[in-house]
Length: 457
Ligand code: NAP
Image (cartoon, rainbow, N blue to C red; front, side, top):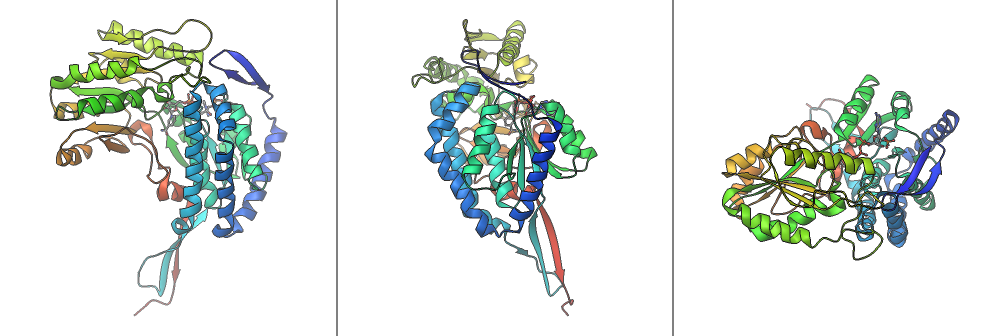
């Protein structure tokens, strides 16, 4: 059974029977057939469908946001923001897809030589629950505009989100099969990866599962984009605007109840300003209101599942036992739901659990360092390399230091965020490949060289 639970109340919302082999086969066949027609349409013909998707998202944003909040517990206002961002992404690719797919002439000795971009076919998307619309929609827009179809295996705790998106694409006029949501457990993924009709996979989720998907798709020689875990550093140097940094730090750590791959997780702060940063960060964190995510006054909702809360709590407890100082929080909130107190740990060292492991929930670790050089060394002292924030008032220093950070993106004097116009992805154990912008679109195309003779003399 695939069950939809409200993590803020523990209430069972709905149960779904996973699709059997016949239903999976029917849907894959339909997807393959629909993609053949879709790929032969011109990109200008595909564009209006993406615009329809964007419009539906905007028109019904409250309805979709409510489904998101009910299934994974984030505050409704954040869920509405998520849906609006999905619309923006579809508008962006509707607007820019044609120029990204345009032939790229490359002078050579031929009469004409160029790159042409062609779709790969069916792209399997294995997705997480933390931004149940955004993670899917950020992949779907470039996949579809370039002439591919998408087969979604969503996280098992957000089946209603998966079905709502499938229905949305149908309402937008896309042929049945171009966006297919398969209600299946994770044990089906290997079989799907081995299916000849699946050409590639985009996976967003944890690093251990990413490894397993990389191995299975590698065996089948399927193209992969892997967006995995992170333990993003948020470096505050002594010359930074400390109060501004602390203010942004609250959002960077606690939005989405701390359950974001690009949440700032390790706050690496130069000693001389560490107390000031701590006080301002604490003051901002104390203003958070944790509660029913459907109520407008709540700025932090529940975590998505109870066992995820238990994992976070174990990491917090271990870090305290290892010598960190608990400034605030540190406990599960009693009663129904998977609520956890916003938590700040100070005097964390790189060897402690909260610095070594990804903490996927509302717990911040402050690490004090002696110099900018040490800050960068500590920032890089992690197996991950997704995003990084760097706060300093010296632009030249920022430019130099940003190039020394092991990350797919460095945000200077700001918080790491995804944006349809900018490539997104990681390095090291945070994965490979890029989403968004033109690079995200080209990931799932065959970049074909076409050479036309005769040779020019
Ligand atoms: P997860 O446990 O890795 O699950 C992600 C997806 O993989 C789900 O659809 C899940 O299905 C499926 N899955 C689980 N085990 C599998 C297996 N053995 N084989 C094939 N598929 C399998 O991750 P999560 O807990 O949902 O999400 C949190 C993680 O995602 C964090 O580590 C976070 O940093 C990362 N993340 C990364 C990004 C990024 O862009 N880099 C963005 C968001 C989240 P079931 O639900 O059915 O198990």
